[in-house]
Structures are given as structure tokens and as C-alpha cells.
Image: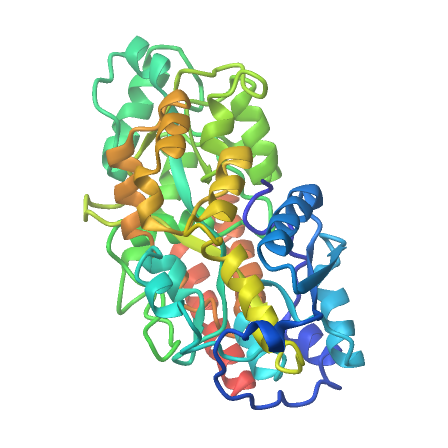
Length: 448
């Protein structure tokens, strides 16, 4: 699976508003139960998503139609990089599908544009929600209403080469930034790597994931519930994290400066080739790291709890993708059946879609009970997972606090640039984060 936002063609708030200017308000549709067999006759659902492994989607849809023979699903895979633009064009033309993929980064804007309808109270939804990891469930809601079932949910993970740490005499995996610095210095001292920490800081759609994760792992916040920034002064966690990053690159020199020219995908491939000892990346990189088909260091890569300023018992950043329903659909009941199947259970009461995506591609499953699924447990054992660490990180992961705003992407890109400027010693951590906070306040005001 590509990184969490590799599929997302970034869109600023201004660009979004330009493209969606013609969008009308969504129709209000009352809650309806699952269709009776009579009403279901000859029902058709138009379904679309970005084109990641469309053959797997087609297999899942064949199973759905076999279980629901009165429903026909017409599936359209859309270009990955142009998914947002293509969907917005369909919305504006009034030819949108009945059900479709939605990114957590787009949910708020699409709801505000009137394109999605809430699914609260639909059959089976409450029971489904009880089994979804908290960070993933939160991503399905906007302004108190639920708009989707989970396609997948994943977390950012911190991984390291256990063989290298053994060679350097480091016995315990680091769980704080101070411990990470100490371990990296031991690796450096042993001559194993000049820069033990490899991380990408090239501006890209994933660029703030590690920063969010370090803040969350430290027990800190960037925004309050009103979407006002609490950094860098009210909550100093972000400031301390950025100061640590600056020292790691230019003080202790344990953070590879090449990272300023690399994105997460490039770092992943460089790490799997045998360079660097510590890195962070999207969750599905971990099984890839221990797969000899992709990794030269398969069998040596371990996961640790994401390091923070202190061991706060928290988790990293998590994110989600969901199945949403058009506000204009005329096949609401059939669309709900499809959403429940793809983002929930099949006719046998199994999470077969989530299980399929995880076992085939390591795509994070959104359901807590799958932690004990025999096939998943066997796969994780083979790939070197330590269940206690992985399950703790999943259970305590958090969504980005301002992810549902229409201005998230613009603020994210601006803040990445500020962090780059700090690491290139063009500005100070305090000045950079002050500028980021000011940008957030400006964007919030413009959106109000």
C-alpha cells in the first residue's frame, strides 16, 4: 500500500473552493433500514475509488453481489493522483457515484459542500463502531455526525535494526527521544552508521506525520477543540520536539542531513536497502521491511513505541480512509449494504474485506477484534511483529487534531516548510512555530 497520502493530490483551501463553487447543498434523507427483498429488486449502485489494486476491489464486489444477488455494483477506479479533482468534477456535474472512497483530509470539506450524507442510526452501525479503534472511529465523524464506514486505518510506526543495536551493545529499544539519542550515539560510536537516524523532510503529503507522532507520543497537543493552535507557548511540546530535531541534525549529528532531499517513500527504499538504523514510516512499511522480496535486512527490523519527550504511554498519529455515501443517491439502502460489507462484515459475520487488505498488502485493519484473528496473528508472527507493542500503539493512536478543517492541507504544507527552514538553520524553532500558529489562525479566520 502506498504511504497514507501518496494517493492524495494535495489541494489548498482556495483551490478546493474554486473547484467546488458550483456544488449545491446536499439533499436531506431520513434514516432508512436495510431494504426488503422486494424493494431490493434490480437495485444498482455506482461505486468509485482511487485505483489502488482495483482487481482486489473487483473480487470483493463479486463476493458482495453473490451475497446480494438483487444488487448490481458498477465500479469505476479513478486515477490516484487526480482522484480529488475527478470526484469534484463529478459532484459539480451531478453525476457522482452513490458510494465512494473518502480521505480523512477531505471529509469536512466534502460535508460542508453538501456532497456527503450522514449515516447515523443505520442498521448494524452502532455495533460496528464499538469494534473500531478509537482514532479510526473518530475519523468517520464530522461535527458530531458519522459519514462513513472504515476502508482502513493505519498508524505511523518507529522501527529499527535490532542486529545493529546488538552490535553496538544497546540492549533496550528507545521509547523516549533522550533514549533514542543515547542509542544513536552508541551506534555512531561503534562505527556502524555515521548518521543512525534516517528520515525524510522533503515537502510532501506525508511530511508532518513524524512531527505529529512525536508530539502525541509526548502527550502533547497542537490544537484545542476550537481549532486554535496551542503551540508554541501554551503547550510547549511541539517546540521541544523541534529543538530536539535541530540538535539531532546539527548538534549530536545523529540525524542524516540527506533527509532534507528525501520524502518518505525514498527513505523507505533507502532504509530497506540497508542504510540507516532508525526510521519512521507508515505502518505497512513494517511488514515490507521483514519481507526478503523487498528488504535486504529482512528478519532484523523491529518496532518500538513511538519515542516522545517522555514515556507518556501514548501512541503515534493515526489516519483513516472511509467509504462515504452521496447526499444525492437514489439507491441509499443498496449503497448502505455495500458500505457495510466493504467497511464492516460480510454475510457470514466476518470482516473479510479488512482481513483481505491486511493479509495481501499490510493495510491497517480498523477493527480491534482482528488483533486475535488466527490468520492475522500468524501473519504478524511470521513478519516479526511484537503484538504487545503494535496493539498498544494502535489502541493509543490519535488523529491529527485539525484534520477535519477545510484548511488542513494548506497549513500542513506551510508548516513542513517552516520545519525545513529550521533544519537548514535558516530560522529558529520558536520563530518557525510562531509563524505556523499565525498561519493556522489566519486560515481559520478566512474559512469562518
